[in-house]
Image (cartoon, rainbow over all chains, first blue to last red; front, side, top):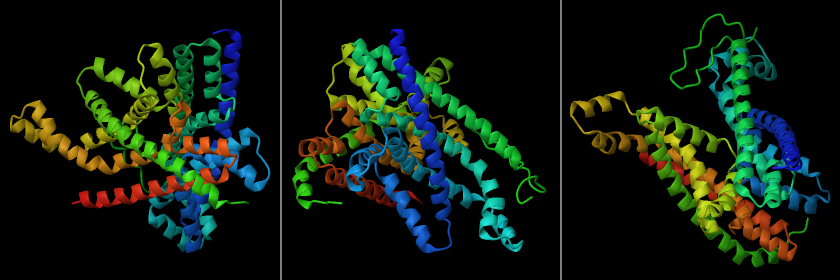
Length: 238
Length: 216
C-alpha cells in the first residue's frame, strides 16, 4: 500500500462519514414524523404513514438506490448530485425502520402519563413534546443504535453507483494492487472501527438521556434491567 | 411520466429468470444461516474461553461490517487462497455467513429462555448432556424462535440484490442488464421494486400464520 493509495482510502472514509451523517439526519427526521403520524387520531394519517413504512421497508435499499439514481431523473427531469441521491435513498429507507422504533417507544410509555397530560389540559402537541417524547426517547436509543450500524453498512451500497465511498475506494485499490486480501481486510476493519465508535457513542447518549428522566440504563451484558425508581421523578412534565 | 407496458412484457422473461435465482439464493442462504447460527450459538456455550472468545469476536466483526464488502472479500480473496467456487456458491456462503451472526443471537435468546427447571429435570433424570440438548432444550428453544428467524428471511430477501455486485443475475441484476440493453430504466426497476414488496408482504403473512399455529 503506497501513501497515494492510503489517501484514496481516507477520501473514501470521508465520503462514507458524510453520507452516514446526512442520511442519519434525514432518517431521524423521517422516523419521528412517520412514527408520530402512526399514532395520530385521524385514521387517514395513520393509514398513509403505515403505507409509507410498508413500502420502504418492503423494498431493498439497493433497489431504492437504483430507483433514485436512474428512474427519478427520468420522471422528474432533474438529477440529484450523487451524495444527495444516496442520502435520499438511504434516509427514506432507514427512516421507515426508524418510524417503527418511534411508534413502539411511544406506545410503551405508561398510558397514565398520557391521561395525566389530558387531565392537565395539555394540547396533543404539548402532551407529545412535554410528556411522551422525553420518556420515549431514551427507550429508542438502543434500537436506534442498531439501526445506525445498519445504516453505516448500507452506505457501502452506493459504491455500486461509483460514488467514491470507502467500499468503492477499496475496489479501486484492489484494481491498482491486483491483490485483494490485504485491502479488503483493511476496509472491513475500518468499517468495524466506525461501527464500534457509533455503538459506544450511543451508549453514552442513552446514559445521559436516562439520567435526565431519572432512570438507570440496563447493563450491557444482558440480564434483567433494574426497576426504574418510581415516585417523584425529576423529569416528565416538569 | 411515460410508462410503456410493452417494455414490461419484454422484461418478463428476464424477470422470471431473476426471480428464480433470487428465490433459490434466499432458500439456500436461509438454510445455511439457520444451521450455522445454531452452531455459533452452541459454541458460545462451551465452557472454555478459548472457544467462546474467538467465536464472539468473529461474529461481532461479521455483524458490524457491510455485507457488500464481505461479498467482495470472498469473491476476490477465496480464489487467491486456491478455493474456487462459482459466483452463486460464493454469494450463498457470504449471505449465509452474514445472517448466521444474527440468527445466532436469536438462538441464544431462545436457549436462555428455556426455564431453568428443564435443565434441573434433565439432571435429575441423569440424562447425558447430548440427550439433554437434543431431547429437552433445543426442541423448546427452536420452537419459540421460529418467528424471529422468519424476520431474518425477509431481511435476507432484501439483501439478495447485493449479489448483483458479484455477477449473479438475480432480480436487480436482470433488471440492470435489461435496462442497459434497452435504455429503459423506469419499468424494469419499478417492476422488481413491486416484486420485492409483494414477496416480503407474502412472507410476513406466512410468518404471522406460522406464529399463530405455533402459539399455544
